[in-house]
Amino acid sequence: MNLKPTIGIETHIELNTNTKMFCRCRVVDTEEPNVNLCPTCLGLPGALPVPNEKAIRYITLLALATGCSITKKGMFHRKNYFYPDLPKNYQISQFDLPVGENGNLEIVIDNEKDYVEIERVHMEEDTGKSSHEGSGRIDSATSTSLDFNRSGIPLVEIVTKPVIKSSKEAVAYIEELRQLAIELEISEGKLEKGNLRFDANISVAPSESNELGTKVEIKNMNSLRSLERAIDFEIKRQSSALENGDIIIQETRHWDESKETTTSMRSKEGSADYRYFSDPDIPNMVLTDEFINQIKENLPSLPHENRNKLTETGLGLSDSNVLSKSEKWIFELYFEVFNNTKDSKASFNWITGELQGQMRKLEIKSLPNWFSPNFLSDVIKLIDENKISFTSGKVILEELIQMDTTPDEIAKRLDLYQENDEVAISKIVNEIIDNNQDIVERIKNGEDKLVGFMVGQIIKSSGGSINPGMAKEILSKELNL
Amino acid sequence: MSKKFDITNIAKLASISLSDDEKEKLSNDLSVIIEHVQALSDLELDTNIEDVYIHPLEKVLALDDDTEKPSLTHDEAMSNAPKVSDGKFIVPPSLE
Image 1: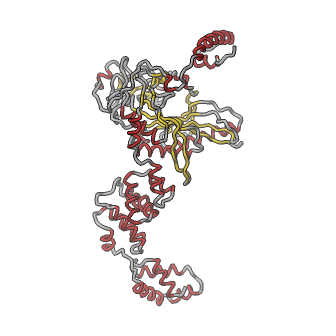
Image 2: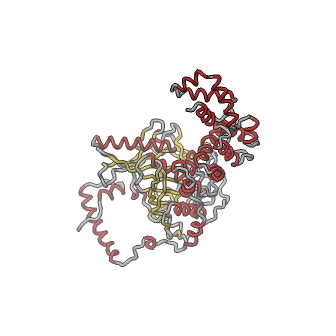
Image 3: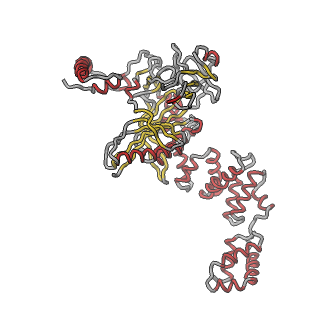
C-alpha cells in the first residue's frame, strides 16, 4: 500500500515581556518557586485580568511577519479544563477570532524554497508547573506539587494547516519560526528553556486518497531531534497499522525520549469538550489601523529577507539558510568580509568553518574587541593572491583570535609569505631536477605520480615558502610536461 | 421531523450514558426545543462573525503597560494553602 503522511504543528512561543499576560507580576527566570504571584495569576476569586499591551503588540508583529490577516475586532475566550496547574480551571485563550489567520512561512529544504501555510496565530496564557511527587510519574505519584511562577506568562500559539509532509520539513519549519521570533525580538527562542514548545498532529492515508487519515497528536517533544524522531516513529507506527488492516485511534500520544517510542496518553478531546465561551471579564479587543500600521512600519528584516540578501551575494540557498539562522554578529561579519573580498564562498567557509571552529576550540563565544573583519578579509585575499598557503591562513587566524596583532605581522614573524618570484623558484626547481635525475627519467617515461614527489622536494627545500601551485607549474615547464 | 444532531455525541459530551429508549425520548424532546429556537433564524441578522458577538461590556479593550507592579509576597501567596512543601503548593495526585 502506498501511504502518505500529513503533519500539522502547533507551536507555543513564550513572549519575553517584563510582566505576565493578564497581570503585572514580573516574569522571572528562577528555580525559587512561587515568588511572583498575585490574585490574578493565582486564579483567586474576584481578580480581574488586564491584557499586556506589549504582548498584544508582539503577537500582532508575529502575525504580520507571517503574512496573516489581522482580526481587528477580536476577543478572548475561556478554555475550560480541570488540572491542578490551572488554578482558574480555565485558560484565557482565543477561539474563533484569533489575532491572525491564513498566513505562511517560507522554509528552505533540500536547497529549495517551500512554504508552510499557517492557519492561525492566537494569544493565550501559560499554566503553572506541576511535579508528580513520589515516583515522578503521574500515574503512581503520592501528591502533586505546584509552582505558579509560570502561570500567566504570555504565550503565542501558531497552528499550521496540515501541509507538512516529512519530519525534515517539520524541523525546517520550527527552525524558521524560531529564527523569526528571534529577529522580531519577541522571544529568546531557547528550546532548552521551553521558550518554544511544539506538538505535532500526524496522520497517514493512502497516497491516492483526497481525505486525511485519523490524526494522532504527539506531545512532549522538547528538542528538534526528538521532533524528528517522534514524527518518523509515528509515521512508521501508523503505516504498519494501516498495512495490517488495524484502525488508528484519534488520541494524544506521549513521546518517550529514552525508549524512542510514542505511548498512548488519552483519547483526544474535541473542541466541544473545552466548553469555550467569551471571557466576560475582558472587553472586546479592537486593534485599530493606527496600531497595526505602526507595527507594520517597524517590522525588522525578516529571516527570508536576510536569506535573499545572502543569495544576492552569490551564496547558495542552503548556505544562505545556515547563515540566516546564525547569531547576528556572524551574519554581519559575513557581509563585511564579503564586501572586502567579493568572494562569497570563501567568506562563508572561513567564517562558519575555520573561525567558528577555532572559537569552539578556544571555548570563546564572542570575538575579542581587537578582531577587525578586515583581518579575515586580508587572510582570504592573501590566500587568493597565492601569498600564503591555506594552512598558513589557519595559523594566522588562530593567532588573530588570541593576540592583538595583524595578519601581515604574523605572516612576517612566522615567515609564512610564500616565494612568488619566478626566477627564485626556478633556481630551486632546477637544483631539485639536477639532484633527482633518476626520478626525472621515470616521470618522462610516464610515471606522472612522481611529479607530486618532486613538488614535495621543492617545497621542502624552500622551507615551505614556495606556493605548491607555482612549484608544479614551473617544474612542468622545465621538464616540458 | 429531521434531527439535526447526534444524540449519542451529545450524551458523550455531557458524560451521561443513555439507553435506547432514553435516546429516543430525549431526541424527540431536543428536536422540539431546537425547532422552537430555530425561529430565530428567520430574523435577518448580519452574519459577519466579528459583529455577531455580543459582549457584556461595550467598552473597547484597555491595555496595560508592561511595567511590573508589586503584589503578593511568597508568604502571603502561600498563606491559605492547606499544604506547602519546599515553597510549593501540595495537592492530591492528579490521577488516583
